[in-house]
Image (cartoon, rainbow, N blue to C red; front, top):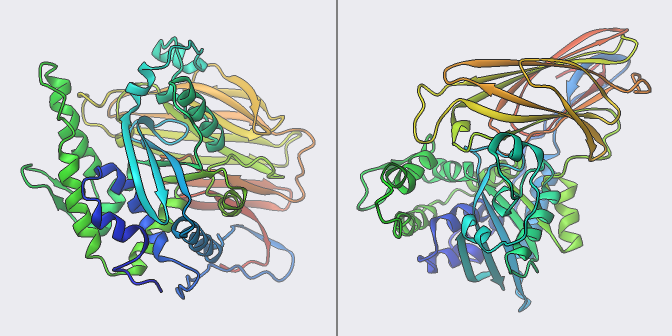
Length: 472
């Protein structure tokens, strides 16, 4: 096991105290990984399912957590090797309190250069400043025109796909249009939720000179108040130093992180961030990319799943941070005995905001429901007319959805799977959208042999299949 007080990025972070807090948020999610080398003997308990005979239960499939830990170790070796090569990474900093299909509103980005396991340079900038350098007129996707009256598509809205590799291509495209050279060795997206999760490890944090305590429950919310609220409410205030707190916050976080001696706590942290898609990575190096793809940390919409599929993807089109208050529940009901397999999907949205203010309003979203290719829309309730299209070897149905403050909207969508759908080997994959919190999911499957139910909380992708005489 690697010494927690030395080596790799941890020593680097102790030296570079002038780095912004956002760098700590990003790299902090990777720190644990840099402790997990191939010599780490930690073993995670794996959930198991015993099978004996004929079909008797419809059960979730356990994740291979041991393989995921091994991948983290290999990524550690790649990032910390000393070969004299400088590698450049683009970091996309996404605020998932304003949810977008790729995780959250892309308000800031960073370009980080790493050599021999150390950061040799870092550059941070607001996405709006990059966008000001883009002169090309690019037509935005339909919802931006319909719901936000945007006429041009730019970098800050580039993550409009639920598929991270697609968003990487778009981000690099807009970066090039701004005059930059997108010759990156990798692109890494990090959601704001990672900041709160860092605070769950360090404990509450106070910054000298500021009368505020940051905790894991609402750390990013309070940080946003410090750096935005006063300036939004009073446009006459000079915004030059509105993010000055981040420098001091960085120093405090470095000190806190340096005092953590629990490798188990750190390893659990980084594992969770990858699993829940708060971090997604894309590498130019084919071997590294193959590693993250093997554990589905590449943020790709699965294209080769051979059975039933569901992915519910929301885009906050209200331009505010209302997703902090949004709660979702999914009920998936499929009838495999019908002439065509018929799905009834219920998505219950709850807007728990007590009132509207400078960052909160009624919720206005563009919802896309991805289903197996060739699925046909039947009807919907509490949502707009459906837009239907195919991508990623899937068919999706798109809807405009509204949820009033303090209210709830129960969206009901009914559709048929293709007539040639294989009912004999039924499996279900539900992919999680990056940036969405925990979502309770109920699955009901009606077959010729009986009806089966499963209740799970979606913190990561969920897989279900029939097991023979399965015992949980």
